[in-house]
Image (tube, rainbow, N blue to C red; front, top):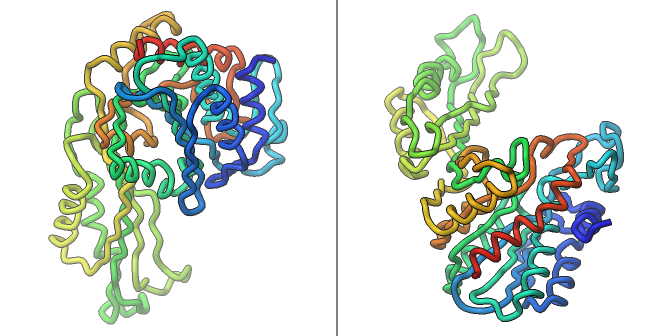
Amino acid sequence: MSDVLELACDLIARPSVTPEDAGCQALIAARLQAAGFACEHLRLGQVDNLWATHGSGAPVLVLLGHTDVVPPGPRQAWSSDPFAPEVRQGVLYGRGSADMKGSVAAFVVAAEQYVAAHPGHPGTLAVLLTSDEEGDAIDGVRHVARLFGERGQRIDWCITGEPSSTETLGDLLRVGRRGSLTGTLVVKGVQGHVAYPHKARNPIHQAAAALAELTARHWDDGYESFPPTSLQVSNLQAGTGASNVIPGELQVLFNLRYNPHWDAPKLEAEIAALLDRHGLEYTLNWHRSGEPFYTPEGTLRSVAREVLGQFAGAPPEESTGGGTSDARFIAPLGAQCIEVGPVNASIHQVDEHVRVADLERLPALYLALIQRLLA
C-alpha cells in the first residue's frame, strides 16, 4: 500500500463528522513535526485547527484543507461502512475519500517529500487544516484568518485541495468562487378564517408580487470568468396545515450566489428596498457565508495551468463555478488562491469514492506546484 493511500485510509477511519476532528490533526501534526515542521494547534470553540510551517520569510505558500466530513447518512445505504475505508476494483470508498481526506493525505506526503529534498528551501511552506469547513465555518478558517490578520501573518499563495476535477485529475483549475448570501425573510400577516378575508391579512398574497419580482430580476451579465449572479428560493413555509385558515406569517429562505459586481451590503440594501416598495411588514435576517474572490493572471495561475496541463494531458478549464470553500477567508488577507484536487463526482454522496490511481498521483501534482512556486 502506498504512503498516501495508507494515510488516506487512516484519516477516513476516523469518524470526523463536522465539527469533530477525531484525532486526524494530531496524526498529521506528528508526521509533519517529524519532517521538521513547527506545528501550532488552534482550538477555537469546538473546532480544531492546525497551522504547520517549514522555513521562514516570503513567499508564503499555504496548503489549505479540512479534516471534517459531512454525515454519512443511512449506513445501510452504503455498500460498505463509510468509516471503514475499502478498496474495490481500484477505487477507494469511504466518507471523505474525495472531500477531502485524500487531498489532505496528499498534501502531507508532498510536504514531507519537498522538505526532505529541500531542507533549506526559500520562503515558507505551510499547511492549514480545520475541522469546521463542512459545518458553520465560524471557528475554522474564518476565525483563523482573523487571528492571522491581527498577527500580520502574510500569505502569498494558497492552494486548496477541494475536489475540483470533473472527469480527469487536473482537468479543471478553480481560480475563484462566487460569494454566498442567505436571507431569512418573515412576512407578517394576520391569521383568520378563509371565509372572512377582510378580517385577516394573508402574507402569502401580500408577498407574491415581491417574490415574483425578486426571482425574476436580472442581476448582472457575469464578471470575467464568473457566471451571472443568481437568486434561488429554497424554502417556503406558511399555514397550519388546515385549508380554512389564512396564515399569520410566511417564512422564505433564499440564497444568492454572486460575482464581484456585488458585495453583501449592496445586495442586502437592494433587496430591502424592493421589499419596502411592496409595502410589506417583514423582518429579514442575513447570513454572509463569504464574499467572492478571484485570482487574476500571475505566477500562481500560470504555474498551476502548466502543471495541471502536464498531469491532465491538456490545458485545464479555468473556472469560478461551484459553491464556496475556505479560500474565501484567505483571499482577503491578500493571498492569491486556487483550488486543485481530485474528481468531485461522488462528494457528499453515498459510496463517496476516489480512484486509487488519482490519489496516488496527487502528491506528485502538489509537489510539482510547490517546487515551481518555492524555486
